[in-house]
View 1 (cartoon, rainbow, N blue to C red):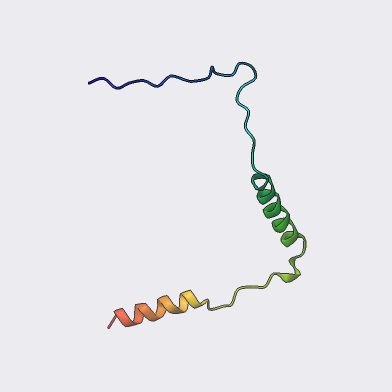
View 2: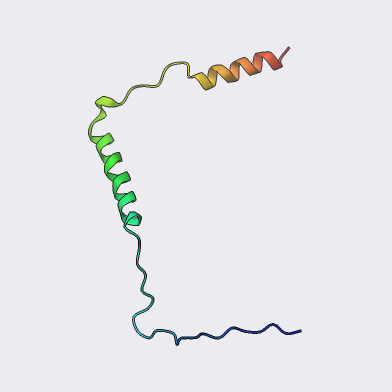
Length: 69
C-alpha cells in the first residue's frame, strides 16, 4: 500500500530565502549572560578562593573508608 504524499496549499516563497523572526529573549538572554560574565571578570574582588577541603572530597573520602572495611 503506497503512502500518500502531501502537497503544499501555498506555493513556496521566491526570493532571498526564508524569513525567520526570533523572540525577544533569544537575543536578550545571551546578551545578559555575556554582560554578567564580563562584570565578574572586571570586578574580581567578589571572587573567593575555594576552601582547601571541599565537601565533595570529604564525602568521597568518607565513602572510601566505609567501603574499605
